[in-house]
Image 1 (tube, rainbow, N blue to C red):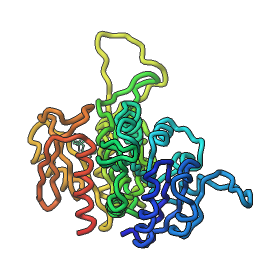
Image 2: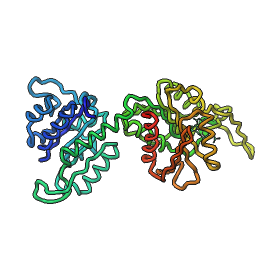
Image 3: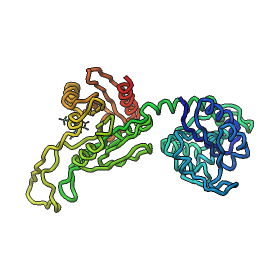
Length: 400
Ligand code: CTP
């Protein structure tokens, strides 16, 4: 459903710009609100008057509007949009997006946008195939933007090859699917924990584990892509986030993770606890660096609070709780026991016996076990694909 959705359409200077008139018409007919921002070069290919008439909104191209001299707020445009579509996206605009250049209103809006950004490239076949363009597209995709691949066919130059911008109907369908998917978790606050915890022994040493945070970060991204407002409580991790709908709270120790999680659980409808939390922490943290002395050193550790169990105790009927289990033996029996003991809706089981699963690697192989005993086995996949499977199971419960 595009009804009421706010679509910002960015047009850059390619002959394919003429297709944006038909595209604008499709969006408006579907009930979307459309605002248009054009690069100066785009104005040579399609007139702002046509687009303003079709979109029912003034078309913007400059930071300062000519007539009245008022300031055009690019930040506002970026914040206004539910989706920012850049079509056609020329090689020049793609290059600038990849490198953060900002010499026109379209690019400034792009840098300010908090919504999903989708680009539909259009250019001649050799320009499209050039390693520079391909690298720029990869960079843009790595920022979390989506790309609608161009079609192959006759190009404006008379040459034949890949570079024709996707047809208005194809772009329209892509945006519609994107918005529908994104809508599934709109308005839901979801709490995620990720990464390891560090338990300090003295000012220079800690007890930690090999968790990289990759799985939990991928889950946070996927939830946010589906429209959820995500609070990510992260132990020490090198991972970076792409989706701006995620609030990241960095913590170090199990105790800090517990406090941050408790603070945000009440307002969350779902909590997904994927962090590898230390089960024990030093009884005493030495204020000074522990000096080397005898042949052995004994550390006295005390139990940390099991955050998942604590949330299971506090959980209301309206909240969902998802835990992880990392097992090396009796996997299924142990995982099922944790569902009951920690009052979970489902548990994601990783077995360290599976090659390519577990800490540090980019892939994972999981089983999901629901509280009613239903089980799903998944193949070895990238952690982002595993995150899609986990979120899919969650959406099924929410919409059941
Ligand atoms: N967990 C937690 N707080 C802890 C320990 C674990 O929230 N102090 C959560 C993890 O985030 C994970 C789940 O509990 O979702 C399972 O962790 P795991 O270490 O596999 O199991 P434990 O319950 O700690 O039990 P055991 O170590 O005996 O297997």
